[in-house]
Length: 497
Image (cartoon, rainbow, N blue to C red; front, side, top):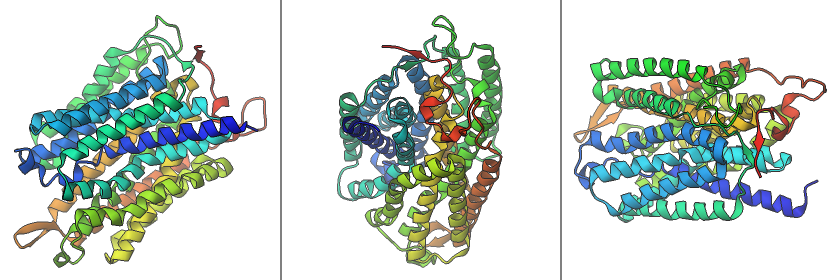
């Protein structure tokens, strides 16, 4: 039984890391309430304003795997502080500038914080007592969705009543508080893989991700069959193929200080459990984000549409608040289910809840109580699925690659949400009505969106069924999922004092 001092220390570590996770997830949503206003505020076009989201997404996708590998090599706490520092710098720049190009750069710097959540999960695996690991990673993983849902009411209030600069200033303050908490409470992990950083692999993956995410996020505006979008998809395919070939030629992590290690160990990533979990994560990210994207639009649409409620930014954020709270409240439930039934079963339950919630919204009338209840149920499903995913990943990778593996999974979830954004934009602009000269999506368009979200969750369930069951541990009777995370795959680890 852990001592009271150790238990209290573990709770503080979880609290500090989870708080930073919420701060980081806010970076993805703080500009969304003001996207329609940014063309006027920053003297740009609506397409230019959309880049405030795209730049943040691309920077986060690029930084997450890089920070994850560097964390495994040189210290997870150290790189977590670096990521928060870059986010704070971007927030301060955005808080004092009115130039579009400068604010766009600030949003890109804020995206660097995407690596905080996978690094935090990895620190928990290294530092927490075994009995607290499952609950800690479930809470940390849930912050990816909960922060956005909780942040929308806050950003809505700021957008309606204060200068938009306060959005960036507030992000800087919360980032500094997070850094202070990490510096004071969270110890540095002694688990290091060593080796030399794979700069070529980092540049190759970055180029491939930029091409892919640009094509996904800009496809609706540029045209899915346009030459630039087709060329970007083709370039992404070529770059990913070349990057994979190069990564496979490098020595696996842990083969010595002088050996250049791959940015992503594809031998481990190709393991059936890791590969299928990452694919399922893309689909779960898609199924979750349909609700977050569409619900706010439904709440704010005028009543003349037949489905809207004409809410203000603040009220629509308040209507979304129960979903964010449920994601946090259900993290202990996720941990309990993962311990008692295994994370795979927990994931399947969460994906099933997402499927039912999306399909129900596709066929039920958009009554206010129904919309709020369905949004809340969607968040519960996301909490269960998101909370189980890191445990599924970490039981299949060595301790020395925890941060890199979790960063790759965070990237998979980000690909799901960005793909969802593109699909929602394509469907809702393809079926519109005009009210007082303004275009609004039809109710049928939203039904199609939720139908696609339900289908994505169904495919996640199918893939989850094929994720390997718990395996017997050689020389013992306990199943792999019954083992504390710290007891699995401890090969290729170097402990530094």
